[in-house]
Length: 395
Ligand code: NAD
Image (cartoon, rainbow, N blue to C red; front, side, top):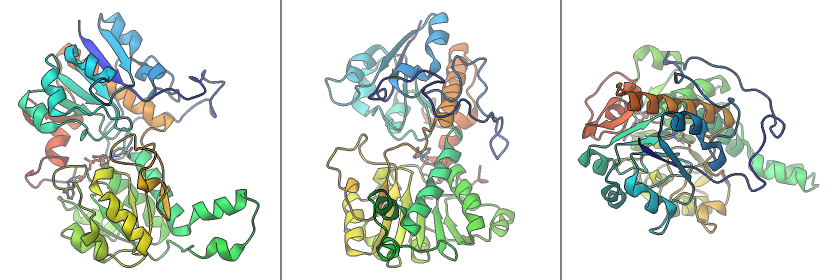
């Protein structure tokens, strides 16, 4: 019998909704494959209806009946920060820890040291930077995530935020709901995306989906990544490749950020880099808050060097009420929601169950779900996270 510790965000303040009567829609589209041909998660069964709220405490990622029928113990908590948290108390004898990036249970080296039984840390979603991967490697802990599960959801959110910033939607909406009609005020910062240079930092699953969704807007597309994309893909989207982010940002009006948070990317969007961008550039960062220097972003917005900043990722999470990104000028921030739409929850809940089924049966996990295993980067981790990965074909 294993103890599975599941850390989820709190339920809605007005209580957990009843399906379907409390939901906006009765169904979500049924999908089978991702654009690269990878199949959606294939667990033996699921015990939820896609479209239900699964990522909050009462949703339990739909895992309780499966785990309990198999004789395992499931502990679901929300309180995750500080030494007196439920997380610190419960992790000491947990075999499996599952956490979502939206409400990350930070698995620091100290916590990994205390979690003597821990064998696998599963990210229900994508992005395992809340786990200290070096410590996981030292302790031989497997780290897996549900690769691709919410990449397209994030790409949609990215496109939305690019348009919201460039067209200056937030100001115009506020004027509408407040009863105003001053068109001149409403359009003083409103531009068209058409014809702009848009740069994609990291053309992985999300970055490429953003490229494909933005191309019809008549923009000029640029990108950089550790791995250059195939020539036919570059030709199809008329992509300009830049050797590094320093070259990329000089040549664009809009930057979107889709690299994992690693030692190489932490703090990369700093004051020096921002100063080399065109005045009035926009940044949309749905990757990780810590890729940007918090105060440099605020200063660049205040000076007008940046015309807008959006994204949904913060450092730390949840962000404190007085985090300056909540109040800085011309921001269109959301809380970390892009990858946890109701359909995305269904995908990563099913993927988490697939990983658990394989793990408990002793079957190998899908390579694309692996970040580290047996003390080394593996699968997607070897491609997207490892500092010194060998050049390889884009995945
Ligand atoms: P992916 O693994 O498909 O792509 C990551 C890409 O980053 C790869 O192409 C890799 O080569 C590139 N890369 C890594 N380090 C780089 C560096 N130093 N310089 C240039 N390129 C580098 O992953 P994905 O599905 O596209 O997701 C990307 C990231 O987005 C995740 O790691 C996660 O942090 C974030 N994410 C956020 C949300 C959200 O809800 N906001 C959801 C999913 C993922």
